[in-house]
Length: 84
Figure 1 (cartoon, rainbow, N blue to C red):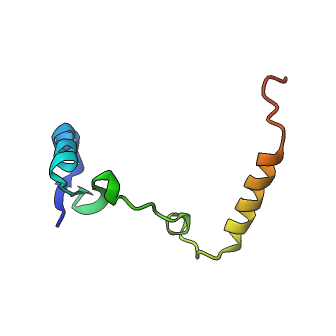
Figure 2 (cartoon, rainbow, N blue to C red):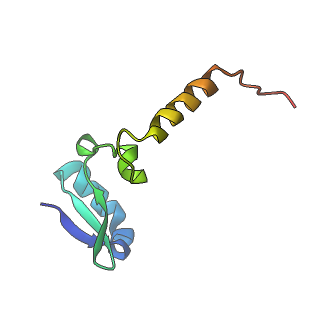
C-alpha cells in the first residue's frame, strides 16, 4: 500500500523519499490539493503509460498509424545537419 504525500512535503523530503523507495521498496502517491497526481515507485515496478491513455484516444485510433508512418518517413530522410 502506497503512502500519500503532498507535493509540498515531497519537495522538502525528496531525498528521503528516494532513499526509502530505493532501499526499502516503499511506494508513495504524490498528491496536490488531496488528489493523486503521481506515483513514486522503484524503477523495476514502474510501468510505461501507453500513449493512447495520455492522449485520451483508443489504442486503434488512426492517429497512431499516421504518427508511425510520419516517424518512419522521417527516419529515411537525410539528416541535413551541418547544412544551411
